Length: 174
Ligand SMILES: [Zn+2]
Image 1 (spheres, protein in one colour):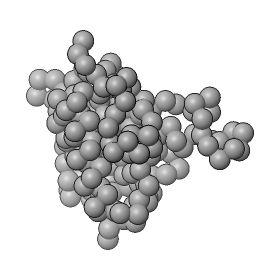
Image 2: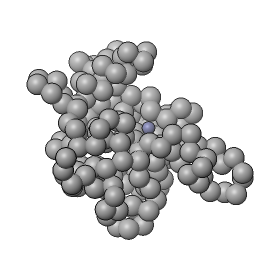
Image 3: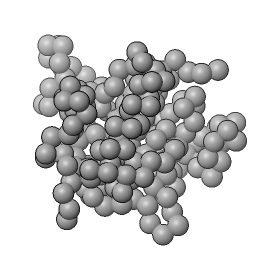
């Protein structure tokens, strides 16, 4: 049965900007899977049989490497492990990097979010840090309230700007 997706959550890998996570024969999904396995995440056998059986732990549904390669992780109908307290009705997408992503990654993210929007038109698109508690109760989660900075850019601003990133969030080369 398809899940009722209400949140599309964007993450970053908190690794150096512009540095690919895939290496040799290991895909970005396999690399992140290794990290999540070490953190104790586990996928259910049923879901591994549905998609990516070699990935035992990865918490995200989609990951995007620096070259703009889009790879799948968990099945979209499989509950993820990426946003504590919000996994049940969300999908998670992760960009390699910290706060500046390559033009190819931005194009890939646009494509992924456009696809998600078609699937779940009513879902809210947000960044992981937007789940930080609104400590002063003013109805906005401001930078001083972020418990983490992931995904390293303002998702609402990016959407309002027609999915065009700010120059400081574009990795222009080492
Ligand atoms: Zn995150």
